[in-house]
Image 1 (cartoon, rainbow, N blue to C red):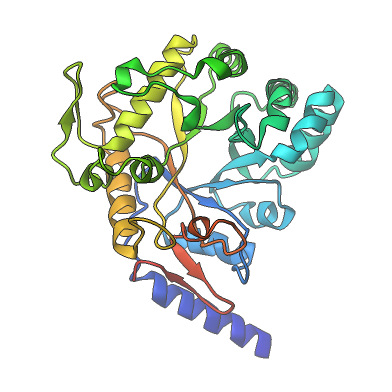
Image 2: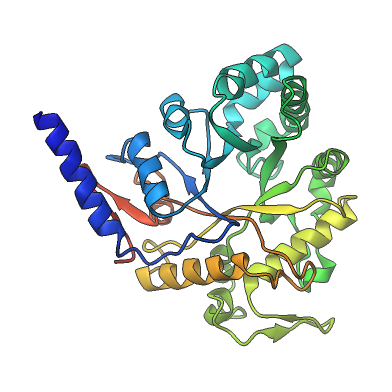
Length: 343
């Protein structure tokens, strides 16, 4: 009985605090990322309850964490499921390994609404993930084959999540192109996605572009509060998010992926730990981002459509480094309650 009372009290506190949260997730195109590299995080069941209370209908998880998948079962929340980078070599090694992965982590959870499988996260020949680069495309192919063989190909798309550092020339956005040293890596991936009607997942962080060049990039342009700017080719951009997104679309076109849509699989703003970090800036960025991507304005290159986007992240993750990476949470998690970071 005492345990039931504690659970009820925790739920009451959770509900009371969430009622004053300021982010509006009611749009059809917005979701949130659920990273677990933090101490004293809520249980997966409480996380699903939090998502339901805030009308978060889409979620990205980074590995097939069994308690999380169990909690998501029957929730009607659509899921991006990650194949961790550390699994890529095994999945790429044989179709049987990929089939086993899909059986264990997808087919065994028939009441979970999987939307995408993200095979790898931010794998690049130019970063500390370079060891996985040669495995990425074979892993994507094998997971795609396993999903198709299971009869799920029409419901679950297989892709990967990339970071925008692979785009070299990005200004003006119409000149966007992938770096020469990654073209042999990225072009076959783009063409595989195009041939199978799958989107490319892209993690887009205007924050990092801003702190790398605050002299030439105005903060209001990054926070969606600017009147905009006209690029040298005569196109007006109201915000840096659209400019980065369109530069990536231009790069896709040059790599043979004109038909490939982009899903923004991460975007957010840190509330502490670095330059221009504050709760106010995080609130402004995330609220304006949500309003923008749920609208029908789209981007100058792809107008008239909402932009499927996932806010990073539900919680601060204090096990990450450097310090800045600890503070992207929308909610602050504690042992007995969860509260909005924007209160």
